[in-house]
Length: 458
Picture 1 (spheres, rainbow, N blue to C red):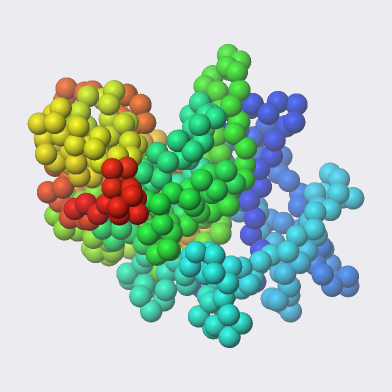
Picture 2 (picture 1 turned 180 degrees about the horizontal axis):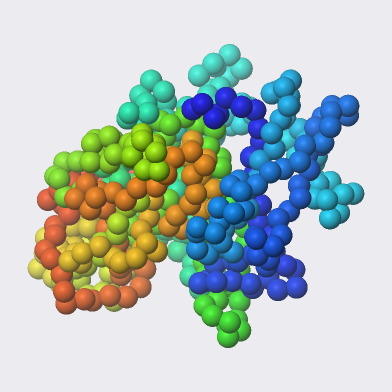
């Protein structure tokens, strides 16, 4: 895009007060200082000692934050404009003027990191020195330009670390369940045309998930990418100051990281910032991405100026419920591994579809989308340099936001996916499997010895 022809470094910054590590709002981390009152004064020292230090500038200007709520939940966004001749520089030192002697050395990984990702996608094999195909940028890995364009962009999902809500010592059991939930998510969304999932993970999560047999097809195909995100759990005792920090306390940070990391890519890649319990859906049977883009999803709007590009497409969410499985048992439908358990549900409910994808047991939806902007989720084009992001919205530096018509695309929110939360008596009928056709990998303990642990179900 035109703005990407400049040479600059972009960064996001989070600030914490070590005297109170539980500062929060709505269970999420919050800044200890108002962004209107203080911003970090970051300075970049380039590798050439004769070159002048480079001061950071804010993205967007702090005044723009006044048009967004919850600015104390949004990371700082900063930019260093590099002078001519510094295009190839990769190593710098950074400091904050409050402590000018405290310098943080760092190097920006350029093309070399792509070969590592290519090897990881092949299961850890190292690339040959002469293998030109291995030297592929991250952008081109996720959205090969021969296959995806700005008219037909690749769609990836990004989901934050799958931490246990209450923490747990039963890591293997819990991550086995997360693996099954991941298979359910990918089996459906790949059928919907999604390219894959960027799953943010810590070291323990990566260790356990890479060993799960059910995930191997998606890891080998490159449809599941485990992104390094080694932030700790932040559980704590309720101190009476509102909802404690949750398993997703860093949701704004991981999403900002994904948007920043892909912001140098072209406009042929889009990112759905979402969660496991949200499923992309169209009421037009057989719809697959990228068909809606440029059709019922407008690429430009007339405000604030003619032909303004849409950088953030906001999806409305609709509750998805079931009359076939009690709410208290729904979490088990999504997490239990053996197919035999699925058949038990079929016997209990009299519904033979219970042995298929969990969505097959759902037959109700909310009569209208969940209200208020805080219930929406976005499809974002990172190339538009979206900053100040928090869960449902952000500020694109290039372009604007637009609401997607609910008849085009929505997100089905499985209300009782993790715990029983909803059993509304007001609903409309909806059978998802009448609209989406897909095949599904499922793990079967009974077939483990004979079939290598994987049973293919349709």
